[in-house]
Length: 225
Figure 1 (tube, rainbow, N blue to C red):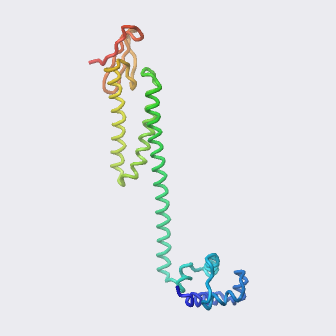
Figure 2 (figure 1 turned 135 degrees about the vertical axis):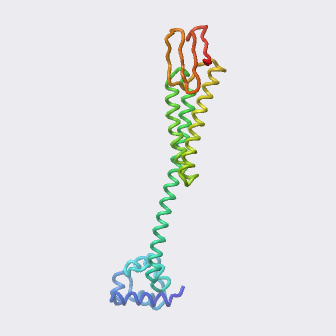
Figure 3 (figure 1 turned 120 degrees about the vertical axis):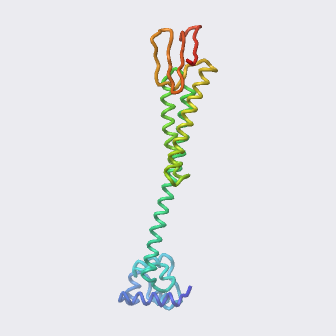
């Protein structure tokens, strides 16, 4: 850092503003001797004073430290770089927020699904409803997270679709095991009814379940073939 050059540049800037050393000293709240020592290169303004001087002369701090004005093209490049950095910083912040929100939604959705399966009995529609609600949270979270993994939209759509198939496939397998292994009615049904008072029909996406003599010792639950 060339203090003599910096001092000469400061002197040049002062003269461009038609200011005497006394005028400048009054504006900055320092002594005439301080201004003189800056301009001769015997001393340097502190960082706080550099900011004030840069604002007063409408120059950048790097220009003061280099002891010369930058060309207009260089100033334009600096501005463009600053704009790009600011945009990059905003994108980074947005990406970080999406990652946090996506993770929270996914975890919250899974919590709702597991809670619904654990708390509500199979014949209650609340278990199905809350599980589907949890699935919406999970898929929304996966969609937000997929933006961090893939640039193109198609892989994000395929990822969300794959997760949806996995979720509903899990629900279907769970219902199948519930009926065949534990002889209980399925949870995820879209239609429940029947004309026989001793028989209830449950329709799922993949199979139909019959519950014979519900609530009695003779109760049977099986998949209709």
